[in-house]
Length: 97
Image 1 (cartoon, helix red, strand yellow):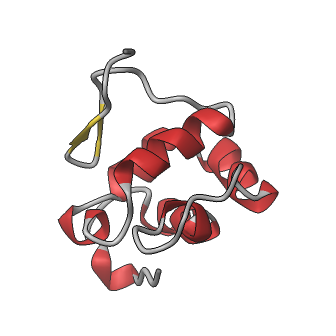
Image 2 (cartoon, rainbow, N blue to C red):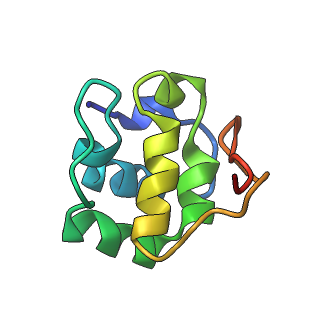
């Protein structure tokens, strides 16, 4: 998965949010199988940068290259779960089943 700064525009979290997405690329790429758990570098980025910032930079172009449910799973596995029925980009986080 390749993400470039040109894929995001005008958000206050541009640099750090996109860096977290890059750090988690192997865990959230649509074309790759999910690893059993996110790599530590991914979780470190999620914890330091925060999911609010990560979700703020996600636009339709980024959503087309990542699996949003995998991102929700990564957030949870890294100890930063997204609230049910909240939005991350345009993705609506599912409620608890």
